[in-house]
Image (cartoon, rainbow, N blue to C red; front, side):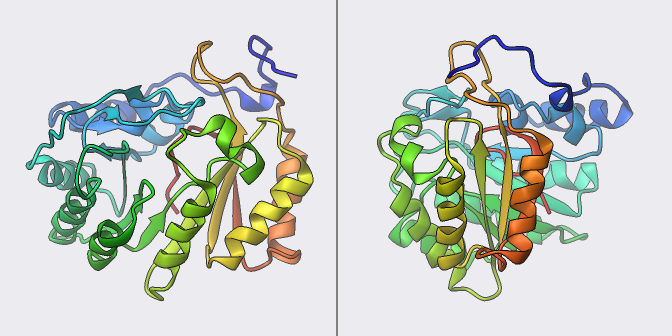
Amino acid sequence: MNLPHARKPDWLRVKRPAGEQFRSVRKALASRSLHTVCEEASCPNQAECWSTGTATFMILGDTCTRGCAFCAVTRGNPGGRIDPREPQRVADAAAEMGLEYVVITSVTRDDLADAGASVFAEAIRCIRDLHSSPKVEVLIPDFQGQALDTLLRAKPDVVAHNIEVVKQLSSSYRHENFNFQRSLQVLEEASRDSEIITKSSLMLGLGETDEEIGIALQQLVAVGVRILVIGQYLSPTHQHQPVTEYIPPEKFDYWAELGRTGPAARLRLRRRRTLCPHFLPCL
């Protein structure tokens, strides 16, 4: 049963954007014409994150060549355009914000020969050159082959790739060019580097069953994923896939406990009140 206009439960209420830290983040980003997934994907956690000085930089523009049923990011064909100065602007913004941990994601760019991997790599290098040398997490599309090698050679601290939903729902809600098994392969390849932590996220509330969630946890463990963030899906607009179910907090506690003691005990589960598509909170 879909709940397109249902009142959100009290535990999903979020505060309005406010505070000096929030304004400082917005200024640092706007002054350098940088995109964030917080804004482009209408993330429900924007106020919470920006108010603590955290933002997820979105590189490679603001237009995705794919487009999933749950995602608010603009879809289209950027025509191969990239901004060669963008990586340095990201590093400059991170320095101004005093970040010790930088999260970078991107739209999917099927119009580029390397899918944008070289831009990710350059952004990592620019951040490494900062005096404070922050940790770097990258949330990547389903890079394959040489593109993934390019990214891994840049040595980010954390490589994240979202499976988004359980396998049984993947073909219904993700773009047809995504493939659940290929997403697992991306994570498995990244996990082979012992110096890199791999991470994924899973949205709940789209009609998945407990059995399907349990299988997904075991699949992630099998390919070497060490951190999983789980959270409630919220439809970004009434034009997007509606929520099927609001998952109560105690259910998230159950999955977190299973991550500590059950078949997925090697997986560190982090619960998040809500998850914005293509957003992954930092460690």
